[in-house]
Image 1: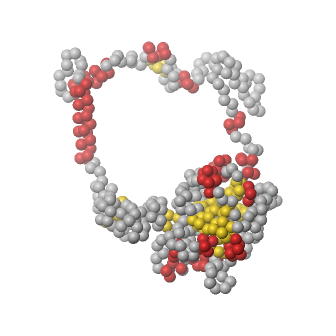
Image 2: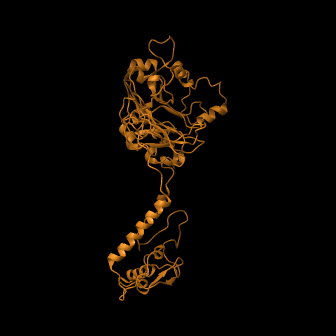
Length: 454
């Protein structure tokens, strides 16, 4: 049983069907699909060998959204979106249930949460529970590149929740029902990160955090877990996939549950596309109207001329041969207007040279011809003088300083945090952040930019 989780940061711009298929997971859980139902296209919803289950954000377009792709050999018995059961469709079956105690939340709060498209629950024949996703919290200091103060790190609400949710070896009895599969097999592996900042290029130096987890219930993990890995070599997002392999196998259901995208009208074949009502017709061939409104007189036979005064669209962009000879061309209304006759060879060049000589105060040659070298020299000289003039008026920004350690041009940044320096600009090393011992990482160069710097 091969399980994967991946925050794709946009399904349409992310891995695509080929990328999902290359992962080879039996169940692939995706986060931040950022696609709504009206924008979901068939190649993304119908991946060969998989059936998919989506939960869309109902409040904002291009925000959140999750999806679960299950191989045909891992078809679930039931599938449901949300965590509260409020989005289940009554009478259609497929609900998973087992929502726990929801008394601490109002129905409005639960509906608002599930409307963001945060969860899909699939029920398979393994009788155990596995949680996959972007938890958005690094559990231990070893899971963060800059943990800071250890006491303040532990007091974060998300980490305190994980402390009580996860079981650790040699921990207090009765603590946690789930196991972090990666840390079970790699308890002390450092720099095992799954998310990096793109704007600073931190993935190059592996300066990130571990936010993506596969959590299995204790009995399943201790008995069946065979492998747990992070796949930083897979591109396409600011996150990378995480993998867990279990010795258990799936027992597929005979039919996909109602939430499966195969049952959506736009993908089930009951809703036809507009292209099916249009027929490609060769030029000059007969054309027949199809549809409910078709009747007699709806066909245009071969060779039939359009009514007088009616022109086809191409006639507005195609000049007749006679118009090229006489100098007439149709205007936007299809009417002809007189154009100057086509210049004889060299005539336009002579006219330009004549004007240039007159403006420069030079005497025009008697035969009206100007040497080609003279014309090119005037053009180059005019362009060079114009460029020099604009450089004196707009000198442009000053070149950035070079950092002391790498002797490379620095990057210009702006202070975004609230305070007295908000909006000020400064120079720092342009290399990505990283460990001090990493030569690929940035140095500690810092310099305020002058007020005149753009």
